[in-house]
Length: 339
Ligand code: HPA
Ligand code: ZN
Image 1: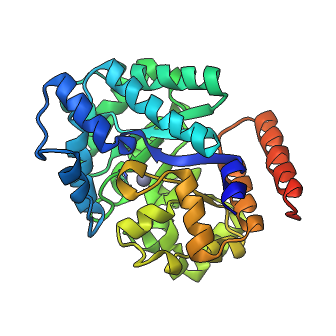
Image 2 (image 1 turned 90 degrees about the vertical axis):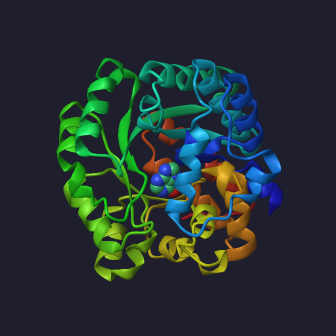
């Protein structure tokens, strides 16, 4: 199974680039930029990675971003992630970035975008990893701040493939951002949004109706509403599920209780993703291995999860056809019969 997972082509659709900041790089960049962190060393920082909810993680996540200052910092961050993609055979990545976490500290929008994009282009050239970039709004900030960020992004829009919504779900309902999402839609930007991670199924319905999203990020709490599960199965509106993240943030108390395979078997377009791998104990390969080892996922189920990611991605038709064939061929080589 280890070898099967290692070689399976994977697509990642829910990844916060700031959440790939490993403690070693955080300290190295802090030193490079003269930013002092509130931990004496890597070991004590790692020891702080004990989260009891989404907010306890977010507090640490935003603190970590303070070391990211120059274009080269954003390049180094993204390049380190792409090296993990190579190791895990991730062939396509759709990546969130949180411009407001940086512009609020005086880092120009162009610096953030420039460094990330330069690494992605180089990764595509050197390793053939295709990509999309999704600008995420921080939902704990105001609608006005989101509009200002959309305005700031305007000159760069040809380089941004869509918008997202992340940060604290509870107390920040999708309605708060309905007008910003409508404005982005008018500019031709497709949307995704986090929903149903800590918030109930009702938040997922509201996100679908008010933000007109192409995918739901997380969405695992849909299981509490049978009508919503039926809707998601019928429409194949994808959920980008993040198993290790969900266990770390106590959305599920243990991996054995995760519902992603149950949702898969009910016909939903669920996909596997790593969310903030530096903080949650693993990248794509680790998430797939956890499903096999702790949930008993079969090879056939893992293939279907990868095929779902092709379907849910924003790749063009030709690339989707090529990757579908590649995954089916890989499965067939390993005795997996896909319908
Ligand atoms: N949920 C919400 N906001 C986030 C996350 C997450 O898992 N990661 C980074 N911002
Ligand atoms: Zn996320």
